Image (cartoon, rainbow, N blue to C red; front, side, top):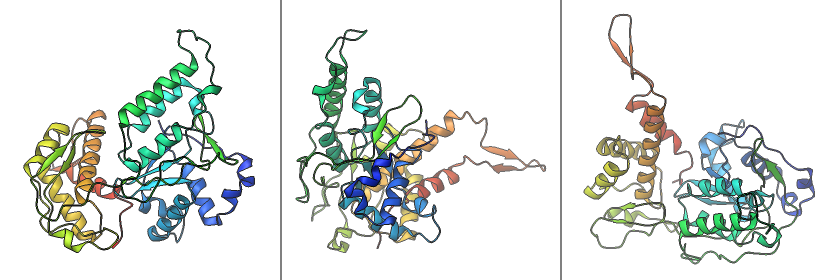
Length: 352
């Protein structure tokens, strides 16, 4: 359920780190922590174009620069490839960890994270939870608060496995010093109070999916993390990569048998070829660059599957609207609208 409000403590205006930012960066941070879809783990989808429409004259390019400033100041962690953003110390500083039931909800929210970079940052924050401050007295059901919270943390660590601490040589998983005064906000009634940030672990950069090898390799599926990760053979696009690793969608990007089997097994309600054709058509028209197009394709499929499930849950009796003449008119939940909505969800893309 979406949050109804967010609360900012007045102590935010005494936080030296927050005051060191300019007014646009401060406003953006306040904007992020007041988003209705911010989950218990502090996770948001990166939706630059959608967010840029919340202020007159704001562009996606300018918004991206502001987000990079927040990340450099350790307020947030982003992953452009998985299009995710984590408000780094959302869980740790304002008492989420003091409530076992809320910690359970946090773990559920954390399992939605696809990015190793964000997973590493969250694990670093969880490792800094002062468990010794929790009660060790047996509760009504026998287990103490400390034991219950510890079990939730163990569940999260087991689910995430062992993410690389510094796979691309750009970050460190070692936590930094104790946070300074932290602004905070509150989830809806009955939910946790969670801080927006603290001085968090040193910037963690877990690498996106590996770049294609120089020579074509057979298609395969890698198991692990949150499920199978579809890969197909590398293409000539590797030669188009810029120093930052971004490249246009390959001319030979196509649906292979491995990708088709993954879609059929995971999202049987989707037509793999149709979704892939729309994906290719959309991104060639956009002319945008990405580091890993197979990760982008997999997210497209996941978003299409989510929307298809939501349409089914609504229990729509029909996707057809009858005109007065008796001629049917496609309804709002047809495939066309579905994949158009998926395209609109790619609001934060690597720019050319």
